[in-house]
Image 1 (cartoon, one colour):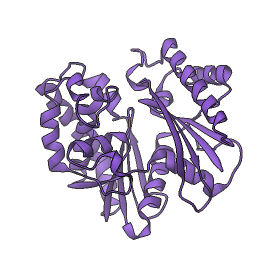
Image 2: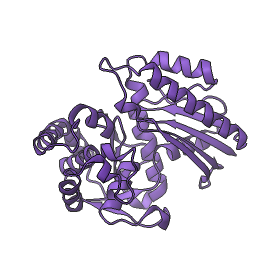
Image 3: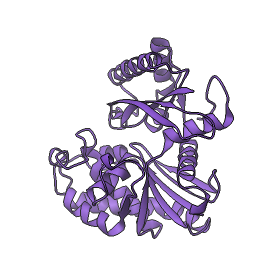
Image 4: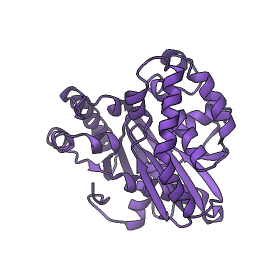
Length: 317
């Protein structure tokens, strides 16, 4: 079965074409993406501007054509935090459907967390024991804790790197006082969710997923992506603190020159690092393993498990 997965995220619109079958390892065949940074392009009243929607429609139309020409028997198209939280979300979704024929399913934050956790569990297997997973996107932070494929507890918090950059770190580079204020605020925001996650049980393995954690791990010495997905990569709390002291004094342009940092992600890097640091501190985690699978793989695995045709059902918005 050849599947297309179209991910309209808070930072990028990303199409992955995979060959997959139930019980097998999804094999990526091609990947196409464009950086739209939707989470940073909301108007003051919380709407996606028509020009931003135009960019989204153009990307969805192009990638839908690629999926078709690649021989995909099905394309699963979904949107996450930026579209989910926009005040004109219904209007945007309607325009996308009317102008491209693609119906975007909007994932709820907890759905997003649980599907990512499924991918992590499948990657590490049952021998990993209880897993605590951390996932930082452009619009939200997902935290899960569990021993099964469905976590015992899942949180989705509006603490994404793009959102916090827009709301807290407008100057370039951000000032020391602003960084300190954001650290304090994050500690307060994470206090109660962290308490609940700790009560669910002490983890045997702590994991970080998605691009922000991969980038932070690379900047603190982990192997590059060219080494392949099965190389063990870790991010330590001490390494992260040293990295923040370094990158918070740099401009976004200078950060974009660092190995593994793209120009479209560099403005969000400080906020992403601060969220990672605060989350690890709140949960008393000294080290994370970096998992190469995340939300997209979780969707593919769930689709293969259910063997349902047609539209993907992901729960309430």
